[in-house]
Amino acid sequence: MGTRERRQREVAEREQRFLDAARELIQQDGLLNLQMSRIAEKCDYAVGTLYQHFVSKEDLLVALASEEAQERVDMFVRVHRWAASTRDRMLGFAVADMMYVRHRPEHFRLLQFAFTEVVWGAAPASRRQSCVEAHAPLRQATLDVIDEAIAAGDLDPRGLPAAEICLAPWALALGLHQIVHTESLVEQHKFADPYRLMLRHTSDLLNGLGWKPLTDSTDAAALDALTKGLCSEVLHDKHCQA
Amino acid sequence: MGTRERRQREVAEREQRFLDAARELIQQDGLLNLQMSRIAEKCDYAVGTLYQHFVSKEDLLVALASEEAQERVDMFVRVHRWAASTRDRMLGFAVADMMYVRHRPEHFRLLQFAFTEVVWGAAPASRRQSCVEAHAPLRQATLDVIDEAIAAGDLDPRGLPAAEICLAPWALALGLHQIVHTESLVEQHKFADPYRLMLRHTSDLLNGLGWKPLTDSTDAAALDALTKGLCSEVLHDKHCQA
DNA sequence: TCAAATTTTGAATTGAATTCAAAATTCGCG
DNA sequence: CGCGAATTTTGAATTCAATTCAAAATTTGA
Image (cartoon, rainbow over the protein chains, first blue to last red):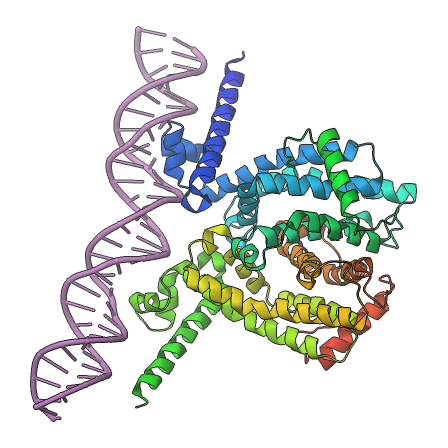
């Protein structure tokens, strides 16, 4: 009978509603002021019901972080499939990432918070695992392009496995987001256009890795063209601006 | 009269004791289990007294993050003064940083947490400012070396102000620490020697920035030699291991 | 149709951060 | 000194949100 299935679907839908409500509340009042009771209330359920889905607030936060990975993953997959050089696709990942973070700064802050010892350590192991799994395709897409680049002769791994090469652009992007998105630091240093800068530095890094075709990172027009191309061809400018 | 001064010193000493106690408790039970009342208890003071120094737990955490900057700053200053090429000193910053983070992983996690919207936003503005100030010398040391490199012709800024060049190595280091220190991610990917890798990538980045003398990042022996040299000459191997 | 099983509920509990009135201490002056 | 005002310390009481759990409601299945 389909009764069991229906129920299962209903429960899944409810979980979705909880997550959506949480997201809205975060958007509205900030992560700082997120309250479990408000989430339940917003969905017209009792707190107890909320706790049937998430054993703790931390659990919910990590679940939220997992779910929000999807949109990013979609972007990465599209970039991965893009008909462009391996190098341009590599830059494409950086562009996709920066578009995403720019348009969903709260998501970035949530991730930052969720991966914090305090939250991560308090979430159940199962949830942590599915969060890691939800993000894995980001890494996988990058690894694929690296492998492809090696196969095509665009990149000489110089003795490093793809996973270790992957670390460099990943870290650069992560660190840049971190710096750009931590309030005070930006206030202090105010980079005019941090993301154009980010792209330039990523390009420099690729040059340093010997990723062909070596390119003049100074050529802002070329980088802007790349960004624009990506926006129109790949990202359906959902996230793109001038 | 010196009465007022003495009192002031006593208060400062007490604050120090609170911070030290907090550090010990974090070391012992983890950031997750830090309790204000335990800190007070450990110092044989009432909670109220603790709150005379720190208006909230967040305030205390950010204060802790500020204080712990000092040791790192000392290392950076020593690297800055080191009689070596600008390029080697740049790598030196990365080495110093990784030594530090390796030996004080809890400090890194604390910083990560403190710069989170939830904590940072809940700390008083004055405390945030002094935290930024406490960390500023790290940035300044790096900027100085960049300026020196430009002046010496080791580095062509290609139209970028030093502050923007600085962003690249800073972000790379930050991102790498983040990845390496977030439990699950390491468990998953297990890089054999993440910090040697980090150094290699930093070297690649410097090559990409055109920082002379351009170097073969593949030469692990050279990077190890650099590390060893730094440990003995600059960092007094307080933080160094085999 | 009804009792067992499951699910939902939200008032009550818990646990930690934070407050604040009372107690203790220090200060300043005769 | 001695004493009252001012300051500091205290920790029990308060607050506030997360979490629990016994009772109520609903669903299941015979």
